[in-house]
Figure 1: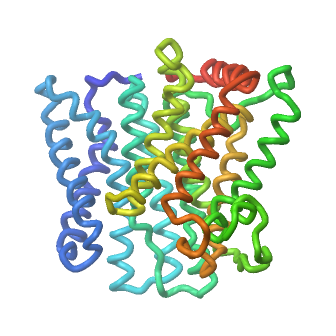
Figure 2: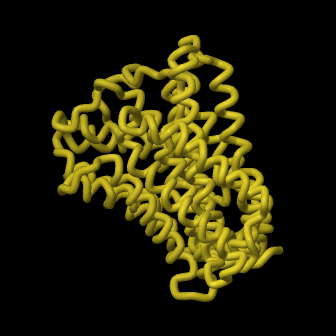
Length: 399
């Protein structure tokens, strides 16, 4: 294993220089005319990476600058998640390469970060730096200007537009990242039958996930308390199911729940001998889940604040479900089910139609989720969570 004082591998130096040249030659000249909402983030990453690269080169002689190597390692994969899509959008706008361009784009995205993951990622040794890396990488992935061309057959274009393939890319990336850190990556914790797993608790859990997937979306249509909690006054057939919505719901479920898995893999071992060893990581994970959902509103008012709190508490529930069941796919399916019902509602959604206005709906959802989280985090359920966390930590090299 290299140390943080080591210089960057020549392959990474060369790759970073080439990427920056592509950015300044092909992207900057069109930056004022295209992708205006992405310019600030893209250009900021470019400038930070350029400065860090120069300092990293100088650090071969000036060892006090060795920290710049870490900055390059953290920024470069995130930078690529902007460079690759914008570059292919720009080139395809001129050349109209269609399916060939799309295939090369996806392949490039999968391959470009592999050298850094294999050659440099193990130099990020502290949990704080590793958490910073996955935070920056996920943030760039979440806001990456994913490229989808207009020169493909409609069905193929719609499939690519769901970004389901990108969720597979993120799973692929997490595997490489945690393998580089010598972590025994497993998306599921092996759960053996024991007294801490109660059949009735599992039944309640399954019922809650099914019921809440509909309640979370139908609450705005209820004109009475009975309709709010389950006596919905219109047929489920009005949900207008589509494969596009299913794929997009799976994309959001996999993207967000795999990040939750990733940050818990780092936070739980780090907190094992600290205050709130289990609840602390869950709270931090839920905090980021809430903050990321604030960016969906871009406003600061009562509704957006309640929406962030709603997402935060939902993050507590999802983390609790994962740690209790030990199965990441369960939280992915739960998350995807909530989104799928919402996507399929379409024109039925009217937040001013029912008994409760939008802020009241959010407060009720927050209270119900909070009650369910407390249920998960008490009694034998808490002991079951503690057992699963100990298994996860034993398999980890991230302490």
